[in-house]
Structures are given as structure tokens and as C-alpha cells.
Length: 303
Image 1 (spheres, helix red, strand yellow):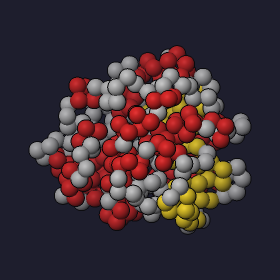
Image 2: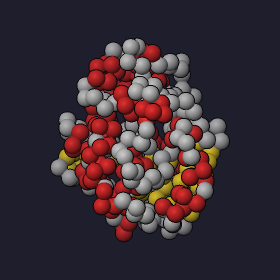
Image 3: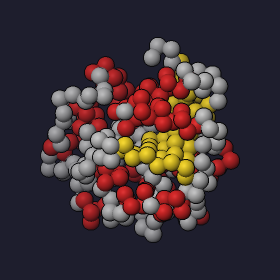
Image 4: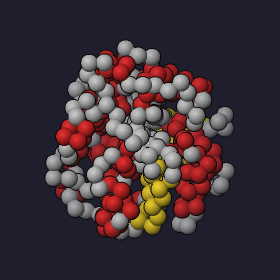
């Protein structure tokens, strides 16, 4: 970890913190919620040792990167302007899909984790409340300030542990009456040391959660903005990896069939591999670091 270099670049109107290591072709890693560049620490070391320059930013709103206060500053047009080349997870995967939609000429190959490409739907929130209730986490994240106050009532490390273990086979719900205190927390996470957890908690203590939550609050704005790309395909060589316990894979009706059938391939015609890893949930790059690092390397070395 001490070999990883840290720097700040100014681009797209903000200061972005990046962690980087190695020399060679660039591989850019994009994290999700509620994470940091740190979630890619294993992959940075692995890919740099295999002849690549591995770079992981703190995305807009996170860690040591600037956090504009308005959700309007988290549109897809802002987010893809921050990027170059791509491995994504969670919100990072969403950003990577959109980047490939806008500028496929800039991407040699894409590896995305956890979140498959879903073309623009007829409605912006496709039945979240009907499927999971109004205490479903995406619904609860919409009102500015509300969930931030709720999170502030709990120790930040505990909040992170609760979230890190909630994106599994059961929907993450944050009951309005009890708030985040009503969500169970594990004693430990087998894939996250206390030192790693405290690093992340300290960054969120400093920055707060608003930046990360603004990605969810910009969903409607982004749905409007990508209207011209309705029905467009992703035309970049792609590998997709998901855990068989990941909420994005198991919760939504028809998602398994879509990912493993012809629907996904029709929308991503250069999709070359789909890997469903057994016994693992959403935070797959940290829970199975060696396997994920190998999957990434085995794919990008072809190009």
C-alpha cells in the first residue's frame, strides 16, 4: 500500500484525488457507494505488478475529491467528463456504461462489476416502491438532508458495516421509524480489516455522505439527459462479473435471465464474458480480491 502514490488533478471544474501505481497501459478503476479509491487497493497492486499503470480516483463527492453540494452537479455529463479508461463497480459501473455510450472510441475494453447495462427505461423509477416499499434505500436517499441526519446518529464505521452487508439477497430497507439504527450490523467483515474500515470511516467523517447520496438524487436528471441515447447499444469489448448473492442480480424480477440470456448481449453486442461468482455479494472486488484481479487481467491483456 505504501507504494501507491497520491496526487490531485484539476479537471472538469473540480479537484480530484487519484491513487496510482505502476507503468504501462492505463487501467482506471471507478468505485461505488459508499466507497473510495481504497476499495480497489488489491487490484491496484495486482495490475501494477503485471505491467499496467493502475489509477483509482476518489469519485466526485467522495474522500479527498471535491464535493459540489448540489445534486445537479452529479449529472452523467459531469461524471463522464472526469474519466479516461475503465473498470467499474456499483455507481462506478454505471458511470463506465455511460462513458462507453458517449465515447466508445476512448475505451479499449471494459470490465464492469455488479451492475449490468440497462437501457433507458420508460419511467425513471421502475417500480422500486411497488417492489420493495418506500423504506427501500434508494427511496430513502432522495430527500436532501434526511438520511444524512439519520447516518449522523450512528457511528460512521457502524453505518459503513451495515451498508456493506446489506446489498445481498434481501433488499436494503432503512425504516423511517428506527432509521439506520434499525439495520443490523455484523461484528466484523471478513474482507475488511479494522484498519481499512477506520480509513474509510475517517474519510466519510471528514467529507460526509452527501456527495455519494447526490448520485441517487440525480437519477431523475440523468434519466432526462440520456433521452437522446434511448435504445443505444454499448459497443465496447466487455466482461461482466457479478456475485450470485448480489442484490442487483437476485432482487429484480427477470434480472438473472437478462444477464445470462440474449437480452444483455443484444444491448452490449461486444459482450465477451459473463462471470457469475458463487457465494459472494455486492462488494465483490474486496470480498474476492484475487479472483477479481485475475479476471480483470485475463481480459484486458487480450487488447
